[in-house]
Image 1: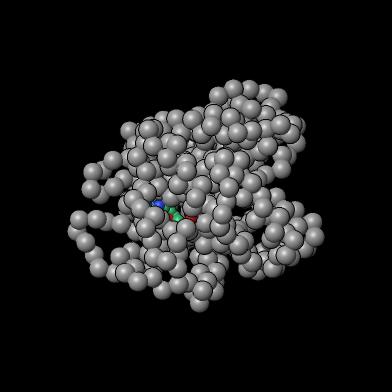
Image 2: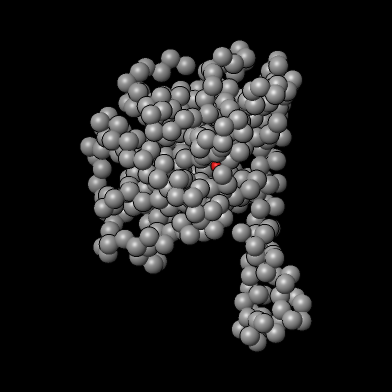
Length: 352
Ligand SMILES: Nc1ncnc2c1ncn2[C@@H]1O[C@H](COP(=O)(O)OP(=O)(O)OP(=O)(O)O)[C@@H](O)[C@H]1O
Ligand SMILES: [Mg+2]
């Protein structure tokens, strides 16, 4: 989208282009868009600086892994590639750290075992969903220092879209609905409340913002423009099929899967649409306790509820300056919550 806007912008600067702008209104629109673009670039820059601080801080604790070279980090994951390139297997090592983020900040305190819990849960979900779409997981036979929290995966060319499915109305979906009666351009019936079930699940994509900047909800038409109509349709259909199956499975275990985010890519080897990243973890999904679900207000979430409560009510953090360290009881209760999600979904005991 940035590329498109700047192309329009530079064309508009020529005299001929200016005439084509139909007077002042067009010019004002151009200025607004340029200012908008500048603001976005500044936001991205700030987010990148923030992420750099976190990943630099994590550098000292990042293990050296024999046979692998560190490439990059997201907020939660560290990515490695083989030290020696093989033309026959284009793989990466995805290591899930114990880092936790809230309000777009990575917190300075880690949640012990979170990386292992998220990895085990993703692996379990990959198995449950493998009939719908192939996934990037190749092996869990990883170097000892990251055992249990790393996966060897097929390297994908990722689509720069967060593929969100919602079966219930809350969060940014609710905020949009209250403004316009729609979510990412999809009209919904009037009178829905926070936490209500939607008549049918909807695909509400978001831009995958570069370098950890804040993601923004976009319409299906926007995705079709960006990736082409066939790819957009494939992402929508697959996202909804995965959500529908996962919601059913979670419901059978007493959990409501309110919404979730998938990331897809294509493998160089066969060009096949492939499910990547993490799947259906409490970080990428909103799970609610089915027996206590009560629409009409916010539902307690399965991951960061204690963290968010403490940050907003007790810490007096302004959400701009570097976040404070978490107290031990908040860490312990958050860890328990992640374990509970894992154990209830999989029916297994988490052994660490
Ligand atoms: N198979 C894959 N091939 C290439 N890149 C992948 C693959 N699977 C996941 N990724 C990418 O690896 C990164 C994982 O890092 P992480 O989840 O920490 O970061 P993030 O997604 O940028 O941040 P957040 O999850 O907090 O929004 C993401 O950018 C994701 O798109
Ligand atoms: Mg991620």
